Amino acid sequence: MPGDVPEPPFIDGSGDDQFKTPLFDAMVNLAESKKVSFHTPGHKSGKGISTRFRKFVGPRIFSIDLTTLDEVDSLQKPKGVIKEAQALAAKAYGAQRSYFLVNGTTGGNHAMMMTVCNPGDKVIIARNAHKSVLAGLILSGAQPFFFSPGVDEQLKISLNVTFEETKAAIEEYVPQGAKAIFLTSPNYYGICADLERIIPYAHEKGLVVLVDEAHGPHLKFHPDLPISAMEAGADLTVQSTHKIIGGMTQASMLHAQGPRVDYTTLTNVLKFSQTTSPSYILMASLDLARMQMATEGFKLLDKAIKLSEEARIKINKIQGVGCFGKDTLKNSLFSNVGDLDVTKLTISVKDLGLSGFQASAILNTKYGIQVEMADPFHILVIVSIGDRKDDLNRLTEALKEMAKDYYKGHQISPLESIGLPQFKNQSVMTPREAFFTDPEYLKLEDSVGKIASEIITVYPPGIPLLVPGEVVTQPILDYLYKMMDLKATVDGLNENNTVICTIKQA
Image (cartoon, rainbow, N blue to C red; front, side, top):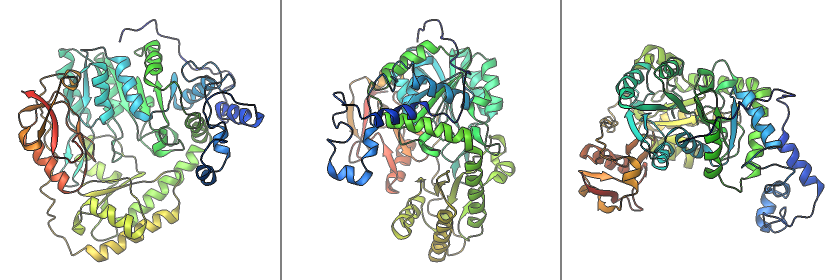
C-alpha cells in the first residue's frame, strides 16, 4: 500500500518497568470509582446483564467491560495507557512497535499482508499458511507464489520449510517481482522454519519478511525454546497470546521492527481492520500476559518444558504410541528444518489401529481429556503454563489403558496410504479476482477442471488444498473424500459437504 513517511520507532524506554500493567490498572481504578455511566456498553457494569450470566461468572468482570473513555484510552488512536502498555510489550518482545489485537492472529495476518502488499504485488508464501493469510491475499489483491514444506513419510506429518527450499523459492520468484515472503513458524506440530538462516537471506534479496507466529508467543522467554521471529530479524510478526500464554481467546499481538516497515500504513490498516469497539477485557489480558511473561516467564515455561519432556519419555515407553522429540529432528529427514518447540506433544496412534480422530474421541468421552487437535495418524497436546503434573499423568495413564485395549502388535494401518497431495496446483487468477467472480455451485465430482473461488482447507494440518484462482484436480478431490470419510474438519464446502464453490472452466 502507498504510505506516508514512516513514524519513528515506538520504544519509549523512560520509566520502562515490566511489572507495570498500565491499562489494567486504569480499568480497575475506573471501575472502583463507581461513576454513573450513560455510555455503552448497555449492560452498565453488569446491572443489565442476564442474572444467569452474572451468577456464573460473578459481577466484577462486567465492571471492566468498558468502552473508549479518557481514563482507559482508545485502541484506534492510543495516547495514554494503551500506548504505554503497547510500548511495554514492544520492550518485552524486542520489537520497535507492538500492537494489541482483539481479532486474534487472523486480524494480524490480514494487517501484515495489507501493509506490505498493494493490489497486484507478488508475495512468496510457504504453503502451510493459515486460512487468514489467504484471506489477506483476497483483501490486499496480492498475487501469491507458493512453495511447500516437505512431508516426513515415516512420521506422517508435514514439516516446516527448510532453508534450502526457501532459498530456491526466493531465487525463482524474486526475478518475477516478489517483494515479500510470508512464513509460518512454528507450525501446528511445533516445528519451526530455520529463521536464523532464512531471514538474513531474504533481506539480502530485498524481501520484507512476515511471520505468522501464532503458536510462538512464549518463545522469547526461555532459552530452551526456539528463537522467536523478532529475535531472528523478521520485519513483522503476529502471535496468538491466547494460544499458549495468559491472553484470553482472541487476544493477540503484532510486532514490528526495522526500516522495511511503513509504520504509518500499518497503523492506518489496523484502524480500519479492527473494531472501533474493542474488548477492554481482552486488551487487559494482553497487558497482564506480557507482564507475566516478562517477569516470571522463565520460571513458568521451565515448568511447562519439564512437564512436556517427562510426559514424552513416559509416552514413548507405551507400546503402540510414540511422541517424537528434538532427537528426531537431529537424526531424520527433520535435520534440515529448524528447531522444535518441545511443549507440543505430537502423539502417534496409528499402531493402535486408530485414527487420530478416533483416539481424540475416546480420550474425550471415556477419559475426560480434550486434545488440541487430531489428524489421521496423531493427536496433538499443547502443554502450557496452565498445566499441572496431575494433568499430564492423567493423559499418560489414559494412553496406557488405550494401548491395552487396542494395541495388537505392529500392524499395517489401513490409513497408511493416506498422504498429503503434492501442492503443484495451477493458478490462473489471483485470489481476489477469483473470490469476487460470480460462482457456480457444483457437486464435488463435477468440479474437476474448474477454478476454485473459495479457500478449501482440511484441519489439521491446515495447509490449503485449494486457494481461490487454482484449478481443481482429481488428486485434490480424492484427498478430500478420504478426509471427509475420516470425519476431518473441511472448510470451504457448503453445509452438507457435497458441493464446491467454483467458477468458469479453466
